Length: 347
Image 1 (cartoon, rainbow, N blue to C red):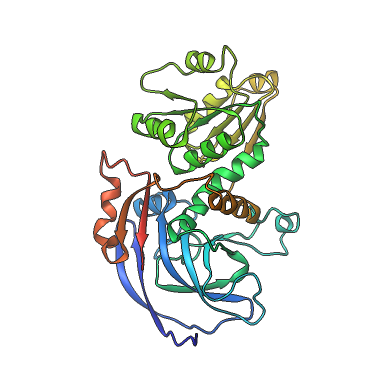
Image 2 (spheres, helix red, strand yellow; image 1 turned 90 degrees about the vertical axis):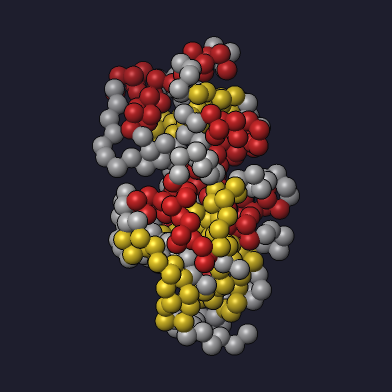
């Protein structure tokens, strides 16, 4: 297809609380390693919502949001070999410098000069855009909805892979927004026994009904330590994932953790975190952070989706057209909306 694009329509976040429809000039000329993609689906992430409310760190305005993407390849540069015109793809939105130390060691998710699409640079909330083709992950079987959720799942998948779970582990996931849900799902797939903890009865019910999670703890109604011992037959979890980004929740993980346990912080707290060191040493706890995802995580998720191990249909419970987003975005914040994952349809 001959590329004759000179402008594209999109949606921009001008400042906190102010989205606007825009038409942008566009240079469709591709570098040898680039691909031009047409955007079909954009998932709304907590990052987007925090940016809208003015609470996203390392963020500048104006910004085109969108990093959970299901796209179609329209054109490729001369040296591109991993995708072809017509491919449906998920986008790995963590752009890195290959010469940095972390990427040289395979840690592309936490590169020193990392630029996240839709956060540090303009994202996919537009009809078309171009990017290095190495960040595209194709599937001939998945829908654009499924491909847009791969990145969401990638955060939890990477955290679970970091923890190196086995079927003998007792796992607790704290905070079951989309990231925590992903961690819970991959923990369950590992064969471990999994409990989830949250303040929302609706989210806890979703975990049991849709993900088959073994047990839930409602922090509004139940005493966590007592409930954990009940769930794990007087034991405590030996792997804990905290996806809350809440400092009090993060501190409490040391109390919940079994001796010799592993704790993974997925949620980000914007401040200093401290803990009682004698307890940390007494239990010989391994404390880890988890950031973004690797290309191998995308490959793993797409494979599990293609064979039906992961079903994302229950996740998407709010849809809007791209032409409706400016007016409807505020609806995501309404009390009682119970949005698990909102999806924007571009075409």
